[in-house]
Image (tube, rainbow, N blue to C red):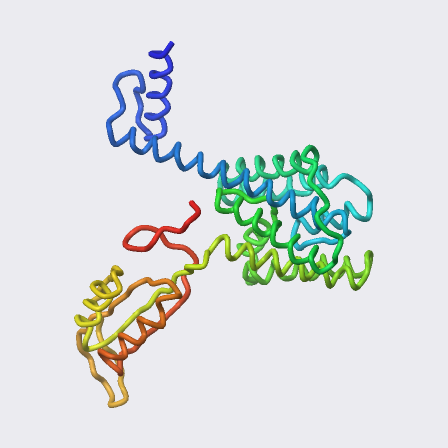
Amino acid sequence: MSSLLQVLINNFILRQSGKKGATARTPTLKERKVFQIHIRQQAVDAFLITMGMLSAGLGLKGFLLPNGFIDGGVTGISLLLSELTGVSLSILIIVINIPFIFLGYKNIDKIFAMKTLTAIIGLSICLLLIPYPIVTSDKLLVAVFGGLFLGAGIGLAMRGGGVIDGTEILAISFNKKSSMTTGDIILLINIIIFSFAAFFLSFERALYSILTYFTAAKTLDFIISGIEEHTGVTIISQQSEDIRKMITEDLGRGVTIYQGKQGYGTHGHQLGNTEIVFTVVTRLEVSKLKAEIEKIDRNAFVLMHSIKDSKGGMIKKKPLH
């Protein structure tokens, strides 16, 4: 029995590596390591999606649903229809998300679509079977903490490689066919949802629902980016070597050196070779980096931009995933 299981595992490893003749040889050490990384990654994804389902279920059933509040996106549409029609939220979440799962399959990939389907069905089961307590009826607490748990759930599911709200899938699909950005499309969708909420429910509940949405959005950003959101820093200076040493030796960060050519200056053409230093630091380290650059070269040109995610090199790993 164990030998048969080993053959099946070997076949799977070889298929994952794109090799043929699974029964003809034993997978190499590198192929086994790739397989182990794949299995470990899938286990982490499954854990994050499960925690996301449980958190979102608490936000919905413990806070928003009993008090008639809604959120933005597809979840908000489901909550609004549940409030107006009395249809179970667990059913509406699956039904309304089905078109978005298809869009995810078509425009992203089938693994993402399968994870999304699993997350949405799991959330529906949580809402149906888990007896979440009604935590509070205070409107402000409901808006804040309902949005917090819902946003955390959506963020954890996204870190796991799926979603439990199809709004971003829809926005990405429309973004490919229009000049609007993904953020603009999501904003437009939510304006429509909250306008309907103000008309069908009440203006006050719509305002509290907007507060819920903003809380969920900020929590989602925190889960995805974390407190150590990274900043890319590009430095052009005649003292590039000293700046490189300061970053690598004092800050303990990695750098990349680009070979560039100077262009125009205040005194006309000043063509010449120059080194461009690029590094990535956390936003907590930006102030120290700027101060150290100032000590070395007061005239250095420094360009900074936010980086939503990064991996590898000397960048610290995020606590999740």
